[in-house]
Image (cartoon, rainbow over all chains, first blue to last red; front, side, top):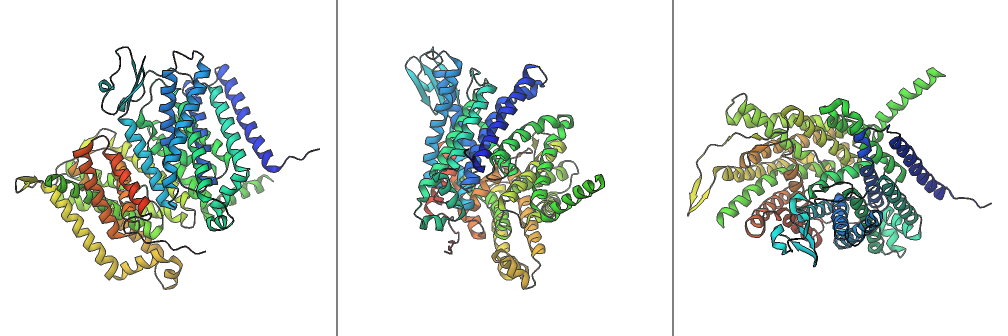
Length: 347
Length: 289
């Protein structure tokens, strides 16, 4: 009998968790046990899980802090929306159009990843973090003044206003500057989101456990030693960065096609930080942790609804307390002491 | 042209004062204090409250705001950052983000999200130089920035506490062995940084008189890039970075595009970092093999 290695077993458990969660939520949804606000959150949760997984590839496995991941999500979102709206006449099947939109989103985000990655990955540590932040802000800013429309002649672009695109009167405006993309046909489904998560997991787990993945982790652990072993630093760092960007782009397309309007402001610094919080709280380099943290932290504000105004305050306090408890020896020893006492009392 | 330059230097001075707080805290605690921008916002609200509700004279308002922010800075450091002294920098970063969320939402609860009109604390006539008008606020901002720069440089270079500060930022362990109170020094740095944030908050709100719970976020990020621009950890670097950033921003707004000005500022930052990877005045990091 063939032995299954621990690593691939771990991977299969991750797929299993996603599928089980999908079945649970789907059955809750079909038996109407899910509140309307929570069922509206299902696709965004999927998008955030993919974002968290993709950022974990950069932060956890490549060891680079990226503060501008929402920028890739933004590019993917708008590229996906444009593709889906432009093809609405020629491709009638909604599912197929969603697939094309996600692929287009991923491709454009990957291109941005290459453009950004080449200069960024020369830098190190906090300087790298700040440049990714800067790129995220630039993408948001440029998206804010983009006007894109489509008519029978094809796509039109402008960075001034909607009228200067020179479209035929029958054309439709897809992206309207700061107003964002309007009139999006809702294509994303929970099933599509789940499949995207599974594909993301498949890509990342296979990359991490491949020769390239070991090279990436080697660079993270000791750059000089890795270089001395003949590993091309730039190539592997860029590989992790671009794959991560492409996945973030696909998450963006999934996210955008779940709403009727999407504004560029949605994908700002706060979104980047939110995803980073998922990764860090879930455990850096731990894929399962990222999945769980993304789900729990997206649902948590919904569950805190009874606190109403105080819920974001509570969220902030939870964040600080969790970080201190998990990272401070005294605090974690104190918590362990309480639990040990309890278990002794029970015994 | 001249008025743009003065405006740019004035805005840059505000960025420089904020960036000083970032750079000092980074130098000593090796952490990116993302809550710094929100301390600015609290400083603005404190001056607003003491002036609009209590009717105190402007100088007292500013002093009150500085005191509150200084105390706030020390409390944040003691409660949130001190337990994480030994933790990874990412954990501290996330905690700082948590503190930032906390301050923003606390402000949202106390003062609501409606923008408040900031009272004019500096009521002086504007100056005429060769046909260009220069507002008193701009001049006072620039003057405040120069004074702070001189005082801080003297403080870190001449006083015993300043020496302790530099020692701790160089090597915590060795500093402790020399009998320096490391925790006290770090608290002091946070206190100074937060006090500066209060001044920056008042100046910022006087120049752009709308006050919201998110007022501090964008200047915070920009000042942070200014600190990196000049070489993070370096006090003159923060000053130069801040002022350059302000000038670039105002000129980009005036001559290129209002909407794209932020993108231009960040693009310049990226180009600088690609050419000089540790900022304009940053130390070169020697690497042990």
